[in-house]
Length: 140
Image (cartoon, rainbow, N blue to C red; front, side, top):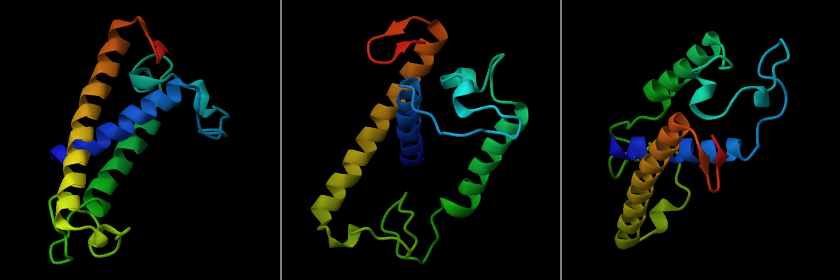
């Protein structure tokens, strides 16, 4: 569970920093012409007067549920080496070329980066609710 939360937190932290820097997907988010950058960043995108419509939020959570149930899961008997190994016999990207010491080191690095990202995204969410100005991120 910690590995999964760490991976999600890494994506959340990077996504928060990227969108606050002004980088958004191009085009419109719906057929009525609302662009991706017309919605606020951070928690305000989900909760607040200018947030994504409820149908959009439901679609996001349904998509996450589909990924959780059908894609990102350990399938027994497919050669997974450890908890959180989602290769399931299909993807490799060179993992099998590493020796055991390197594999253990890379797994520890991922775990530590995930822990740092969990603290980082929590800090960003707290600062967003408190308001104020952060050095790199700017006004929240």
